[in-house]
Length: 204
Image 1 (tube, rainbow, N blue to C red):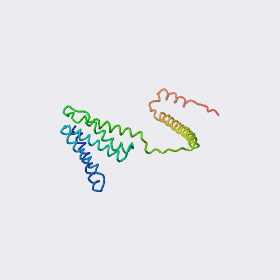
Image 2 (image 1 turned 30 degrees about the vertical axis):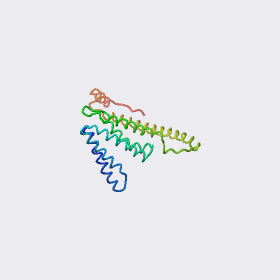
Image 3 (image 1 turned 120 degrees about the vertical axis):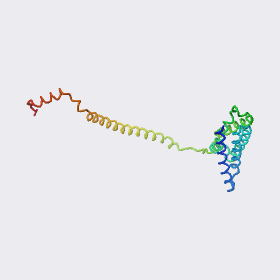
Image 4 (image 1 turned 180 degrees about the vertical axis):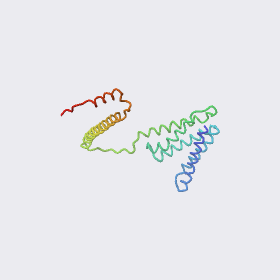
């Protein structure tokens, strides 16, 4: 839990600092409040106090309300606002030997409801555009794609065939050049010497 508490403290400090700077510019108060909530949770987790779950449950519920207010049931902005905090709640859902179970009955229902809201937002596609495509384009594009695929496969086959033939030739030349001088046997040299001394006739 020490590493988890340090993570919450660092994240809370970052959100608090950025939130205060955003407030000075006239922005939202959420990030500063979220930073304070995470710092309180991190301190409570370090001391293994049950108030950690209560603080995180309130923070998670408030974050869900803020995310729905900002983006509605839109999957991508909603998941980016809630996904990380849903994952950070998982260690708090498992009571340790020295970590009391206080606050678990508050955090678990909040975590389930917020998770269901986030997942259910997949059913609402707010960026969908209804329309109809030109049927000539729809029927022509698959045929053209098939022709391109076949041509590409043939080209790849020709290229690989050339590469394989070149590689075989290089291997053959390498095998001939890599023969050791000692591979010629003495009896072979004797036969060659006899053949050189004997008169031969070349065919015309």
